[in-house]
Image (tube, rainbow, N blue to C red; front, side, top):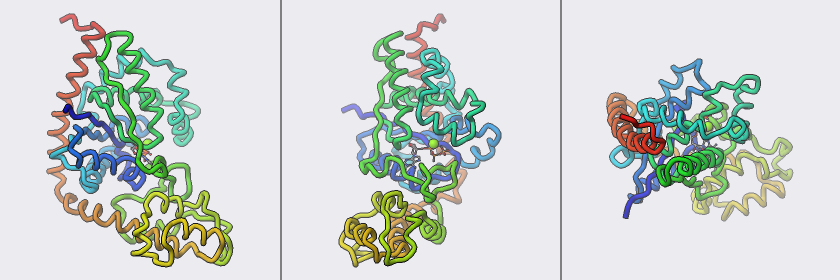
Length: 347
Ligand code: ATP
Ligand code: MG
């Protein structure tokens, strides 16, 4: 059986956070472990430049951070090709061809781009590179002939844009040159888009509302203790609200029944805990301590694995360089087919 191809990536704009973990990284590790997929993982430094052109040092420094996070969660370079976007020339040529198939108004309609423009204060003047990064992302996905792209829900509009480009290209030039990709969302619906610890729309490196995979135990605890809950729940005895309460939002994602036995035997399951909170008599501190225990259980092995690689930067760079060469050769096959299909190869 031919293995399906999986491509994902992360922008090296900061260390990775628990939103990345449940939104995408966990799935990648599972896919790797299954052995059923050929997996490419890209550190998207060029995409990161589209809204950080004034701060390339940040991107450079975070390439190794992201690589360390990958190894820490269990991505294995023996089985997964991990490469750097800027090392793959095909990814710069393909967008030139694809951009002829996309209109300006189509780019401006992209809901993720719209909200990112707002977040970044680009309303008055949008860098062209930023507006067009979905086209560059289509190049990333198609260059590797990816069938599957495991992502958080914020990436669905990008996948849709890619699919439109694939269909336009194949219809216009030659059938079946580009592969039509599909998004793979997390199994747990609550993990589609993790909110920030401040209750903000999305946990995001650029918003400073994250729990990072590399945060030490104390920092995680501090962040959990400072989480947004129900601002009107002042006395323990009073009823509290679950909706919009970040601590419960996170429990919905991370908590399993067995955690109650281990860390909070007063309740059998999350429903019981929520009911008590709603009726009054359960304080925020107790719920936060419970969440902290669960997060520590998940993050401790990740943190420990990270330490093993931290002092071996040379090895990490060697892996990235070697894998980028392999990835570039792979992407060039698609580039060649694309040039051929358009018919611009006269010699
Ligand atoms: P930036 O703020 O620089 O855009 P980011 O935190 O949004 O950073 P990305 O590198 O853009 O992270 O996203 C990498 C992957 O992680 C994508 O598949 C995205 O869908 C997923 N992801 C990012 N943030 C979350 C989140 N809060 N919840 C679930 N998935 C997320
Ligand atoms: Mg993002």
